Length: 176
Length: 193
Image (cartoon, rainbow over all chains, first blue to last red):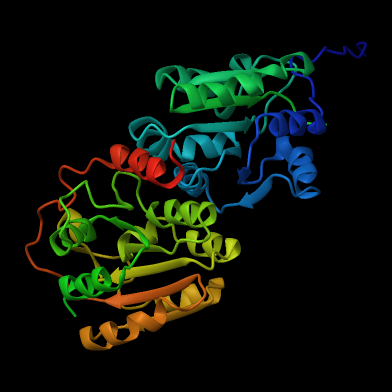
């Protein structure tokens, strides 16, 4: 019987409270979510406070559309969704974030990711194809693979505003 | 009733509301208002995002709670994102008025029938989803008469407007729509940035 081998994770958890603090600093007004397994502690933290409004949508298409309406009305929303939901909603990313130039910052969790491997080296198509898909669509992305990457949340948000378009903040491991 | 009659009634009652149209309602709205296309104040024409007009309107309604928001939707469009009924009802914007023109067909693509046409009831669905008020109207005179009161109710209000399919109307009424410019102009009007 062989010895157990422990493999160091490539992606490590970021504390939900740390993410929440960054959202506060950015002046985010709303988080529109379709519940994401990886971000469940962030969603729980959001649900315990009232400074940022937490809205739940039935689909990611809806979330992107609500984001557009809120931005038109002068608010500062972001999305919290899962990567397969992003794939499901690519038409609205195209129509609203890209064609209509609406700032659309999406925090995207990697459902089903093996955190001991890079996303591109994961076996599942739902994980390994995300970054190549974003590359093909020329959508900027900002991977958060551990606490040291926390500043990428602000970078992604500011990118969406400055470029009037989409930005994806990839949450590499479940938030703690 | 004819779509143009219903649109004319809505235009007459819109007041200071922010208005949102999609698909075939776009051309009818443009024909009914005095302003030039793409320059209608506080108005958006939504194209290319497959049933998202009502949730864009929801976002605006939440961001601008002191303004009424009127969305003129279609049955085919709503069916593309039917869950939006639940999302809208859950957010419960008191200032959102959701008019769904039901003609039973996908008119934009050539008037193909909707799946299950005649067997489902969007008004009942909206009511069951939790809209504050949901009603169906199929007569133009009744619609005109009911509109002022409907627009005074606390929303979200759902109104199914039963219209006749308009045979042969295959021209894309949204041709030339500048949705991106409208969205950025509306934001500027609303918040000055």
